[in-house]
Length: 431
Image 1 (cartoon, rainbow, N blue to C red):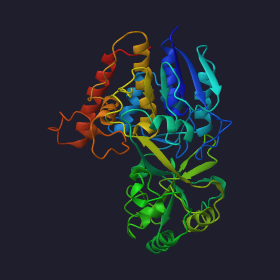
Image 2 (image 1 turned 180 degrees about the horizontal axis):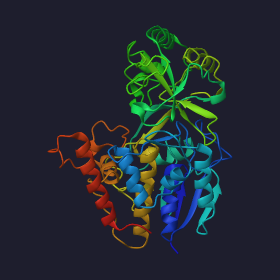
Image 3 (image 1 turned 30 degrees about the vertical axis):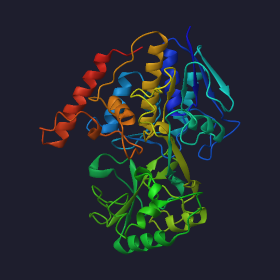
Image 4 (image 1 turned 90 degrees about the horizontal axis):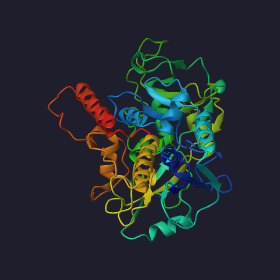
């Protein structure tokens, strides 16, 4: 039996290990947890969700929704775990964090050809290996990675939103409703004009926790701290995470001036995260300023928002489109450290790396994921020469654009999705 080592059991590493093991490879899956934890992690389980419990849209006319369906068709462990642990979230796929992690952990722990080791890896292992240690890779290992030929390192700052208990909310001010009458999976805190301006002004002046080396221009737009967004202009939040489009306050029958949404964070429905409220405010300031939101006056915080530095590879010229190192055929990288951004995208890179390494170990040709698929488009972005390489989410804009003649956007996206899924099925990569 061929063998491989996977370093890191976050979403990318867990997916890579599963794909290898299901294809007959003996996998040693190594992580420094629980003996040593990164600043962003709190639990000992695999596939821990740090920033949010949402894997974003589940619609095929949304790029990340299409990416998830591509992964489902290739028997992704991460998407299977998400489907098994999902909680109500309108058109999004959100999960109970603990149930999601437990499903992944139990599945990999129960596989005969997966050996799990808890230790810190400080050297790049010999033999076939996938490194998926994430953007908070330990200093010792990152020193070894940074010495690899043809590699540069980049970094940006990432943040997580706070979580509050549902029972502490003032339900006299809060109502349940999803945008555009797509169910009632979200909690809404409507704001009047005066309430919004008071809140936004307080947020602009609130005290932030120091982050070593922090620079505003090194914040990834997809995880922009809410206070950084507020400082761009007093109305920035009203056109961003507090945009009230598709919401009607049942007490007034009108659209509120601004609206804060909370999403269920666990299966029991006892915890909620404040959507779009990634922050680096100090903990007392989070209590004070977020307590100005109608309905959160006495909110109990189960977890405060935090911010940390993420580091990723200068992948163009270093990795191929299947996340393999150009200078060494048995070395792969996966996850956010490659320059993909998002839970689903990270797992997708692990899926592609795992499948490709299994093929190489068996002497077969690399699978070719075409740019007509989101899996292929992301890999092509990571490998393509890009002067200003930055973390990237799944996007229809990355795909082969041969349907540009279709002017209706939704119909164009539907055509792209149908072509993509047909191409995935034709690859015949199910184990």
